[in-house]
Amino acid sequence: MGSPRRPTYASPGRRQPPAPAEPEVISASKSAPEADTPCLPGRKKVKDAGRKRSADEAPAGPDKAPAGTDNVLVFPEPPGKRRKRNILVTLGIVLALVCALLAAAIFSPVLAVGTVSVSGTRLVTTEQVQAALEPLKGKPLPQISDEEVSRLLAPLVQIKSVSTQARPPSGLVVQVLERIPVALVKQGEQYQLVDVDGVVLASPADPAGVALPVIDGGAGAIGKDLFQATAAVLGALPLDVLSRLSNASAQSVDAVELKLVDGQTIIWGNAGEKELKAKVLEALLKVPADPKNPVRVYDVSAPRHPVTR
Image (cartoon, rainbow, N blue to C red):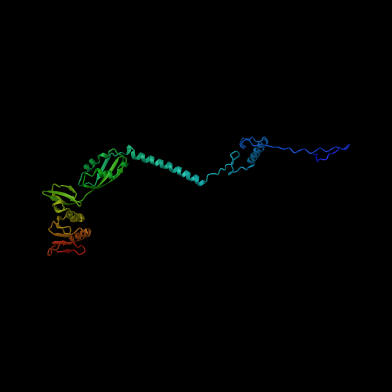
């Protein structure tokens, strides 16, 4: 089959125009991952140059990172956060110093107990208290508590409570609060000094010289309830009234009676309203005696309506 292209003929003296060039066909195939394919040198340089130019042209400021830091923004620390951190650091240092000073004070041998001063003793002697507190010698003052002193003085039943005070560098002051005796309890031929709780405080060698009422029998002889009722009444009386009593007795917890050294009888009743009864009795005893009508009985069992006869 013949070619459809028509032949051309060059005429003499006329230059034939060049035939159009065939388009160049470029083909490529991908045989490896893109990361392993080397980039064209020209393209890489253009890309790197563009990136460098962009970084160099970026304005520098407080909120912009300098070139070459991968565009990481750095913000200034807020003043409040900085101030809070400084305060916490300062407090930590102060706390550490205080702890160090406390440790030095608590465990320092400079503050060890050297002398013990005692006050408030009547039923026990100062020497007895100091001997009982001998284990405290050499112990730092800040380590000593009222509870420890009370525990050491527990064998001395006459002492009800104590309070301590440190006198640096080596002094310890102990204030003693003793139990108050309210009666003498007769046990056979022996007399015992007891307080309102029935605690035996001493055995006086001369009971007649003790200005306290006598309770015949002890807690076991008249019963615990009767003894406690009688002791509670005696404990509520003022010392000047208590010193005028000769003895106390109780037929029941509601029938407590007292005897004065002058022979007068006091009908007390039960232990209820004992403070009010004590005030009424004290007022009645201050009334001047009438020789024509001497008072033999003071009845304060109903303290709001006392009776004398």
